[in-house]
Length: 162
Image (tube, rainbow, N blue to C red):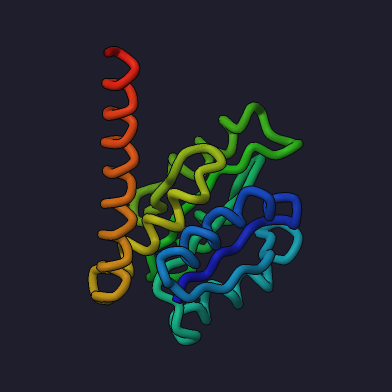
């Protein structure tokens, strides 16, 4: 249901967090490597066939010049979530952030924080939840758990103050 792609295997360490979030939320996904620069034909094929293969959202992670999310967004009508990756050839990650964030009009890419693949997975699940009640319920449990952790922290802090 969600495609997770990245420019190179070195991005896998970061992008696995998107897959883990989707797994926790019960959202089927696939994960592969699609390089905008080294395998442009593969990128075209992946993006152009994504909808027919049943994908609903694409998460695309890339470092450096980070063309992958924008190029994929130009080739499909599916929502694309870009994950800027701080890579070895990156300028503190800012080149990746700006490459994904500053898309031209008509080619939107939702952008999460630098190395923010987990949030990309959660955002993809939220998109899916607009029509899938089971995913919506899973997200609600997840959000309730976040709230509960904060409330437990508040209680622990109160006990320390006494």
